Image (tube, rainbow, N blue to C red; front, side, top):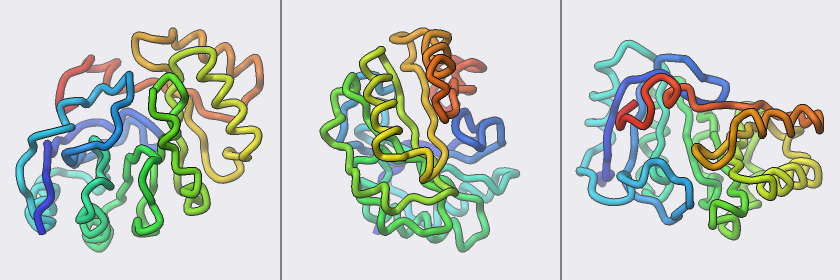
Length: 212
């Protein structure tokens, strides 16, 4: 069975605990969500057919063992699970960037899930699949993009009431162009919130360039 592939590219990981590491990105096509601040809308449609074997061959051309499968929403394609398993079997350090709206129970346990929780300003918070929290552990990470003070209050409440920081590291990022990074950083410090503040390294280096 073929996957729909938007692009494969080699860059520095811009987010999460692997930030700064040379990484091959496998961007699959399609996403059932339409977050208001999405910066990869070009991956919603189009793409080209690719098999798991052809993707593995393309990844092998780059000098790194770090691979990130992203989208769109990669889990919208059922064959994504086979791709993740094959990458792990090939001894890659694999991470998956997923929206948190689809079931992650079938993801290979060797994969690190970087799972979003959608705050209200995304327009998609109703899609959060809270059941996914039961499938996360210390090797995974929860990411929340914050576009306003209301989003921050929502995130703080979720972290406190659901004990998110006891499950795995929690990352808070300001939505580009909507919230000043220093403002979010100040709120985190004021509350002593047990999270990691992050900016997108790739955007600091290359702006919104596609394939970076």
